[in-house]
Length: 323
Ligand code: UDP
Ligand code: MG
Image 1 (cartoon, rainbow, N blue to C red):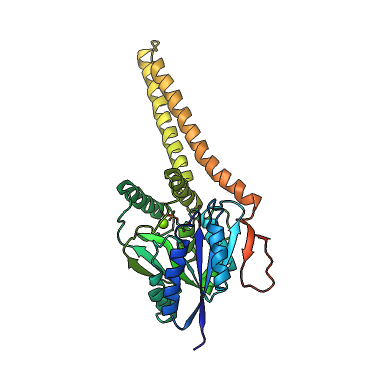
Image 2 (spheres, rainbow, N blue to C red):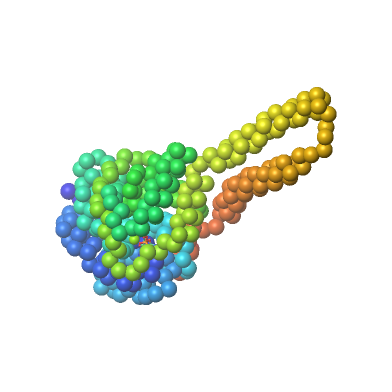
């Protein structure tokens, strides 16, 4: 049988503490998979520590190691895109550098796509051990809301760790939107996916790059990127208020005709003005979110800018612009 190649795309942001451990572990797994060639595509997402130097060291020792380095921090979604773009493997895996995604899972994943007829195999963590309770709770709610509002199915416990066939990689690359919500993209392109459960592991070293606000922004991206339900919601509330107003007018007219019009009721008027004004601003805010996203897409800026590219692709020079 012809030897197949897997490219492992590894987004790294300030991961100097774990990158060596990760490399050792994935090499061990690569060694166990005899009939497969490997390519390791590290993407340095504008780290401010020694991550890039670590990558350069690894490449000196091992030509299977390739890397791209961004000119600043563009976010994990952009890093994954860049890695997929430069991957040359027949199959491509995306995996975190912090060993929270056990590289050993690549073995059953590879079996799923080569022997069991799947296009992709993805990891699903079945426990959220070591994660703050509030974060797990909010995150679970969020995915449920997202599933209701859009056609995007995010499987419970889904993480950005999966192995994909070339066809699926090309489909993902075909979605060149700037606001990238990768879980949504994977679900949107379809393909047959096998879910492989695993126990959550704490990161080997270093610390998480997600702050509370980064997570909020990520969730907004998910909802606005894949659903227009908030727009419909605003129209619905508007219509409801309008109908309410008609009834209120009828009531006041009838009351005035029957009993005259003693002065009064200005506090309720003030409340109404405030309430409706607030609602209008809220609606405009939602509209603005969509408009803002549209504006950024229309600008058509590159998804990332790489300042160093060291891959094994022939004719590649050292710096290039991503698109
Ligand atoms: N990451 C990245 N760019 C960022 C943030 C994170 O490339 O702006 C990488 C990070 O180096 C790691 C992966 O994305 O390999 C997951 O990040 P992290 O472990 O901080 O997230 P968590 O596992 O806590 O969800
Ligand atoms: Mg992690």
